[in-house]
Structures are given as structure tokens and as C-alpha cells.
Length: 302
Image (cartoon, rainbow, N blue to C red; front, side, top):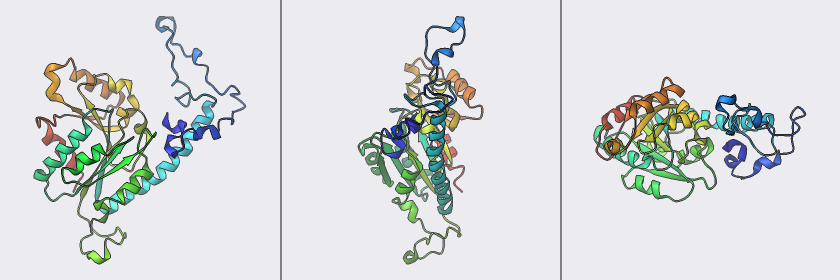
């Protein structure tokens, strides 16, 4: 996984600093994958690299070392995520982390959401943080709606992390959202003790159904966006993501008449990995389901 490959640190290959730290109990520094067959009835020669304690295989690294490295990296991220969460609360910001594969329709849904919120909640400040490997295409689309957006380009990185969000949030107008009674010359003072007007922060993560699942950004919840063009089996193929999400939004439902997509089966798969997951069906193109989607987004904006 990405924690092990070092992309979170901005130094691809950083893991090799630790590659020679083999554990005495595991001198070969690799799990014996051939021991993990499921019996003759299911033995087709398939390989299962996620069945060791670390649930990942890294050449030259023991399972124990992989677990320690992941704990170190995710622990450092968690401290900043917790600070982000407190900072958002202090500003009255409700933040959601939108995760999906590339092409699910996240940006189209975001643009439609911002336009719909102008009618539904015209006084509500909305800001967007966009994550991609390269380009500002998505942030430019968001800005065209009139909403402020900060683009984060991750380079080789396959996810957003909490430090990135902290830096991006500091550049958004939401960060300067004034407390009641504040004067412009004093700003908000960062005392975070007075009532604040609510605002909404929508984070569009890098298109990837694997790595963003394990990175807390300080958000209120993860929202998994799944297009009906992707196939109903994605929740069981990428279980970590759907287990981490509070809501699954099935997008592009206007295309259902043209597809062989089993909505009930998809929901059943999602509930298999996450019995508490909520599900909405939405078409940003036709507006179907948009009211229920706005209801969900606004439920914690008080």
C-alpha cells in the first residue's frame, strides 16, 4: 500500500532507508504466499499477497517492519488530522472527504451540488479542495461556479493527507470566516470560542479506490462515489474504501436503462463490507436524487 512505498512523505522509495531492518523471526523478509491456498477446491494457482499480518507485501521488507512503518506514518498523519478536525470545528466548518475511482463523476457532482446549494442554502459558504496528480482542470471547473477552490497536485502521491489539507484550508476564504462580533481588522483571532456561521468544505480526493481509505484528513465523514458505469462489484473488490465510508452515492443513474448494473446487488455488496453504510442514487445530469443528496450534506450544517 501507499504507506509502505513512501509516497506520503514526498520521497518515493523512502522505504528503502529501512529495507535492511529485517526481523530475526523473519530473516527472509517476505511472507510465504504459497502457504495461503484455500484448499484443493479453490486452488487455481491464484496469488494472495494481502493475507499476511501487514495485509501487504513489499520486496525486501518483513511483515513486522511493514506494520511498524505503517503505524509510524499513519500516526503522524493522525495527529494532524485531529488538529484539522478541531480547527474545522472552531470555524464552524463541516468537511466531507469524497473518494472514488477516476471518472466516477465526482467533479460533475460537485459542480451541480454547488449550483443547487445556491438555491437551497444561498447564504452558506462553500469551499472545495481538489486532489489530483497533475493539472488544475478540476479546480478550474469548481471556480467557474463561483466557489473558491484550492488545487493540490500530489505528483506521484496517490492520495491526499492531513498536512496537505491543513495547508490548503489555510488558503481558503472559509479559514477567514468571521466569528459573530468580530471586526475585520481583528479577523477571527483563532480563539475559536465564539459562535460561528456554518460553512461546508468538500474535499475531492485523488481518484483511487485503495489508498485514500486509510488516510484521515480531519473530515466529518468519507463519501464513496461510485458510478453505475463501473460495475456493482466494486464494494467487495475494494472493501477498505467502502468500509471506511459513511455514505455511498451511486452516480450517473440516468444511464441505468442502458447498462447491465444491478443496483440491489451493489447495495448488498456495500452492506456486506459495511452494514451501516447509507446509500443514495443521484444523477447530476438530470437532477434525480439531488434533493436527498443536499439533505444529507446539510444534516450536520447547523
